[in-house]
Length: 115
Length: 114
Image (cartoon, rainbow over all chains, first blue to last red; front, side, top):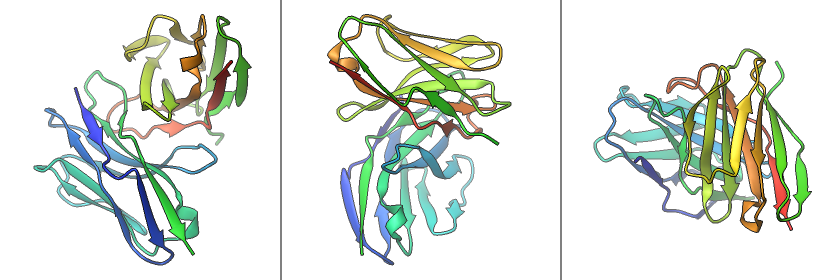
């Protein structure tokens, strides 16, 4: 079974600085997607960024980028120029496709942004 | 385009009762998934439906059931409620539920069992 581990329950960052959230996963599949979702206090899960396992190039979306290390099964999220609106719970998630049709989530990292 | 709509937003039920939660997916999306979110267990997959067929089910007791209608709207039902069923229930929709499609989430239904 696939597992996703986020080892940092909480992180904090100063506004305008950079923070990296860690995620590791375990799978025997070769075709899969990895995601970072953000859940603010409004509870709405919002997709931040995604990475296809076959792509060697790390995904980037504006201030958000990932460091995808397939051999190490590591998928970290870097947030540059942190803003107050980035404060939220961040979840790393795995979708192995096939006939699973589900996301497997990590426990989450609560990010605080200090002004 | 309207997002994923979950109703109701909040529910308070008594132990032993049953409850039905509703999810309306984004127009054109045929896959609907349900997740239970609790502080202790995090986000856990309940089940996924596509074209009225359940394709996958998580490790939950039979008290948890769901269905999908021909318009892709989905409901989940929990019978004989227990205190431990108190959670945020999230619904997600996607075009086909496959690995390459993004899942869009609703705002959830907060269920409290007393």
